Amino acid sequence: MEKFRIHGGRKLRGEVTISGSKNAALPCLAATLLTAQPVILCGLPRVRDIVTMERVLETLGESCAHSGGATTVVAGAGAAHHAPYELVRTMRASVLVLGPLLARRRRARVALPGGCAIGARPIDFHLQALTELGADLRVESGDIVAEARGGLRASEVTFPRITVTGTENLLMAATLARGRTVLRNCAREPEVEDLAGLLSTMGARIAGSGTDTLEVEGVDELHGADHPVIPDRIEAGTYVIAAALAGDGVTVSGCRPDHMGALLGALREAGAVLSTDAGAVAVPPQPKPLRAVSLTTGEYPGFATDLQAQFLALMTQADGVSSVTEAIFENRFQHVLELKRLGAAIEVEGSTAEVHGPTRLDGTTVMASDLRASAALVLAGLVARGETVVDRIYHLDRGYEAMEVKLDALGAAVERFNPGRYL
Image 1 (cartoon, rainbow, N blue to C red):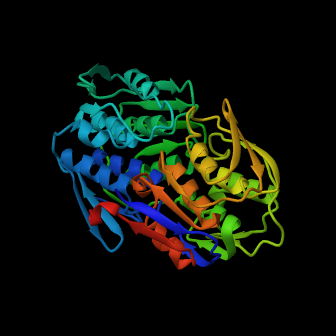
Image 2 (image 1 turned 120 degrees about the vertical axis):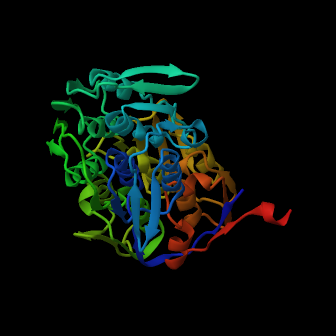
Image 3 (image 1 turned 60 degrees about the vertical axis):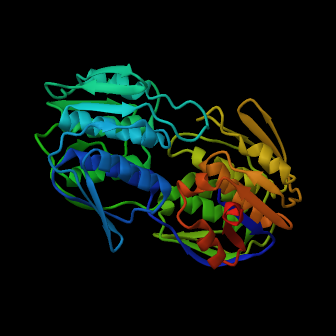
């Protein structure tokens, strides 16, 4: 099993370029099921989750070809509709094929999803909303089995709680439903807006993109499109935090600072000096140590739960006491015990972690529990004394493209190794 070996204490300098957004690319890949024509997606990151989704699509009869940074996906006229557990269990976002399959092929069999163990992310909202569009659903042998023999029909749906994948699933399904569908209490994340942009380019009629109410006028069919996915705001945020934590002049380029308002605001509140333009965040050498700030995660435009672990690592080196409250997932502090192994002073009570800083971190072996936790441990390893080994980095590879290569280009000392090779 591959690990990272990090020699801490080195300053980061230079420029790092952000990859395309994993969380935008996944629903865009699922949307290719809505047409028989080729869809070209540009800027997809080559990370494990993308490869998994492409394998799911291939089991559904699609072909995926890569050339010059573009991925061409062709669904054709096949009738395959089963996304098996062997693939879906590794990634919850696989459930995004449910809506498109029902909309165009009128039936779907999708295994109940797996993914990171960061708390319950029930898909009940997806299923209930799809029934309101006329789908018949049941759970059978661990699979969601769905049919819409006469096609989906428009309805008005109000999500009881904001759900990103639920919004995306229903948005895709509604594009081919008969009539006008209204979706309320929708997620407003940039990734949802990016999906709406792709669907509109494919011929969908969508109003309200970027708001909490989406109106979709169903059409008979969608056509092919050429679409660049947005930059990954979570990867960008991770490197901005790394620059604030261990940087001596770092520019994070190829990103969208307008998608990172909550993080940049929290960093400025902590005393970080930084500047932005249309496509970059510059973090110069910091004139003073950071001070502790407190925050609560929330749906966009709030502070992203996917940056909570990384921000917690930053606060271990800030002056004072900070509290970070997790309001999205109930089990997303698994990284705290591993940060404490490095020497962090953190106590968790309920949904809040209290951090006392700054504390000296000393390298040791730590274990990643999920995608963003692994990133937090890498960041902590950058400032820990001595050698830190991060185990189970397959979590990291689900969402970060060549992280060790990008960090080493900034002057870090991060080595990927596999002890099993020497046994």
